[in-house]
Figure 1 (cartoon, helix red, strand yellow):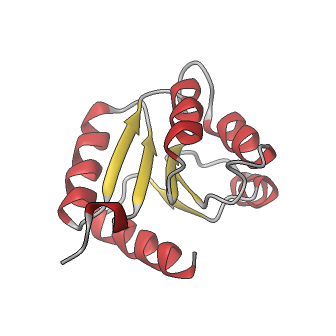
Figure 2: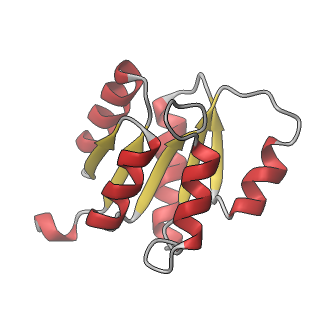
Figure 3: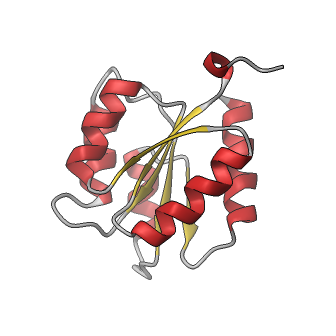
Length: 128
């Protein structure tokens, strides 16, 4: 049986409570330990405190957007190694390029199926 300390930690940073709840339930039922932040500033604090194995990050949020959060996390030696999955409904032409430049591992377009997100999460954590 897996010890609690062996469970992978995932930090979910998004400002949509319904989406967070749905994703959090699915991740926890799959055996992950999940922490949540509802804005970018809180997400950065949480990432530095808990050192998650993976961050799932929304791009469009109040206070601090996902680009700024990813940039700050990737500039910090303590958090730069943490893989980031971007969740976004943005249709910006330069989205993929900006995400790659920031060092983002993957991104998923909203709306999405939680099963698709889980496949990406598992693949990234297996590589890590």
